[in-house]
Image: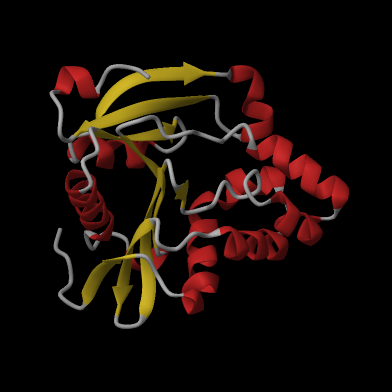
Length: 212
C-alpha cells in the first residue's frame, strides 16, 4: 500500500473546508449520528458549526480535503462535543425537542480525555481515497503529534460492527484494553459492544495501557 505524493498532511483545516469536513465525517459516522439527528441536511449543518478545526490532522489532495484524524484533549475536540458543548448555538438548528433528544442520545457517545491521554475523535477517509494509505498516514501523523506534545498514549474506541478499523489500529500498534458490551442498546445504536484500545507513546506499555 502506497501513499500518493500529491497528498499532503497538516494540523487543522480552514473555515472554507467545514462543509467538506462535515460530509467526510457524515460518510463515516452518519449511521451513528443519524440516531440522534435523522435529517442529513440538519446533521451536516450541526457538524459544520461544531467543528474545532485545529483539533485534527487533515489530509488534502491538491486543495481537496480527503481525510481527517480528529482528536480530543482537555482543551476540546474536533467535533466540539457535537451538541453538549454548544447547545445554545446548535439547538436552533434542531428545534427545542429535537435538540434535547439529540443531546440525550449523543451523550451515549461522549468520551472525556484523561490526563496524559490523546483521545481520538474520529478517523475518516474519503471513499474514493481508500486503499491508498491515507488512514495509516493520518494515524502516523497523529502519533507524531502525541509524541511532540508529551502525551502518554492515544486512546480510541472502536465498535464491534467495524472490524476493518480494528484491524487497521492493531497494525499500527494499538493494544486492546477492554471491551464493553451493551446488547440492550443494539436496537437503538446499531452496535452492541465497543473495544477500548491504547497506543503507548511516552511511557512504558504497562503504564500506558492500564484502564482509566
